[in-house]
Image 1 (cartoon, rainbow, N blue to C red):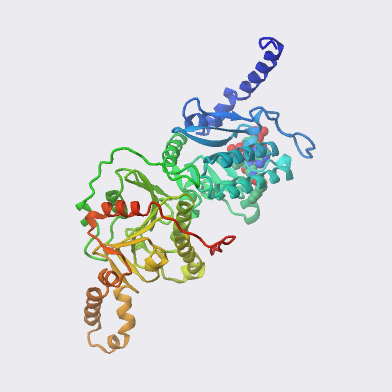
Image 2: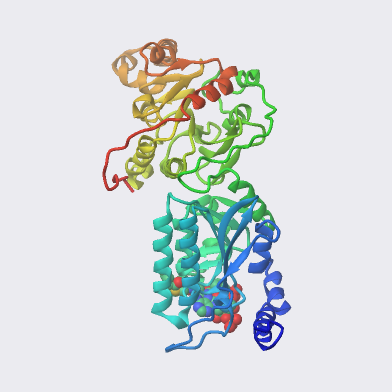
Length: 518
Ligand code: HXC
């Protein structure tokens, strides 16, 4: 065959036609909105010259359309393929808003489904770069079935490969449920939006005026709905953040998380840890300082920083090994557990458990948040999620009680009898059924009513309770915790404990699946 003759010409013609499709004009439109094109995003994300596109030349299905027509284009508005990110195999798809608003028609959907199935077979993470107006209206039911197969694939891959969505424009209608089903969602401030029904429908149905930003902007989803785990101010920084984040994750559920072999510049004994928790139990402090003084320097990557900040979750490295951290944050609402923090913690724990990431819990929690709103909105049902997730997780689980550990919150934060492998406490720990104030009010109600000086009596009783009950030594002596440790040696203790647990194996009872209280 003469490859320089007519066969080669036909091949080149197609290539040229493809290149002209991605015109400067289209790119300009994206840039004007502060967005990159799908191809530019992939170029930033993947190691140079490693991305291999597949299904480049598929064309949309224009058959049997009853309403409007679809734009003739190669690729049908989505680029799919695989490549290397920091040397590791990753699959990806990037929707192209310049072609029919990145809307999802049946061919577009089939391309995504194909790449999803490949990622699952190869045991490699998949990244979705989303910029889409949702189901392609012209294609009707066909595009809805396309979404259904994509959702089905995400659900089948859940817990087997990490799945990450990055919203880089609109994610409207059906486009929102892929990210919602995936493990983590990144959003770009001011240029990305997620909503099931847009401002026009809100106006029509409810006669309410709302902007795109107010309805489904990045900040709304990072702070209020909890849909977005990470937000950045522009696409470049979002991609830098995503690449760093990937370095903490294994490629699939049978791999261990990657180990960073660099020399760690950290002392095993760190006296700074003696100074962070204040002597006064009512004073706040920042638990992130504790994390930073235990884990490898600058290795903490917080997840969902803006949502339910009374519970901190994230990944850090301990001697190079990824560890999941769940920590009550005393500087926000005294670190109390409420509905949002329970759900945030539970989902994070389940991710760690799916992907063999050991979990450290740092506990300083006065209890569950009381109140009519919390009770009526379901703190019982939602608190149960955290309880369930901790108990269900079979990865190595260690708790360090830093200070308050009262009541149900003691139980839920990976207590010994809930399956904690090692449970340590600092000398500042207060472990009891409830805090001193509440205990004295209940046990000495009559005495306080009869007293001439109830304020002094209460203060005396609170002090007695604190001295006798609210300390770690009763729990230590009864074996409910494993050891009261010197805070300065926490890092050393944890390295040794996690090493001892590195081959932990738990036989789980055979069943279809448990019934987590969703
Ligand atoms: C077909 C679409 C489209 C769609 C946008 N376009 N969305 N084509 N189907 N769903 C096309 C537009 O017609 C336009 O084509 C081009 O994409 C760019 O769109 P613009 O509106 O000009 O852009 P912009 O002003 O930036 O607004 C973007 C947008 C808006 C906010 C996403 O397009 C929009 O509201 N689209 C519809 C969103 C929506 O309601 N989707 C839900 C679909 S139903 P031209 O040719 O003019 O360039 C759904 C069902 C599943 O998804 C539900 C499961 C829960």
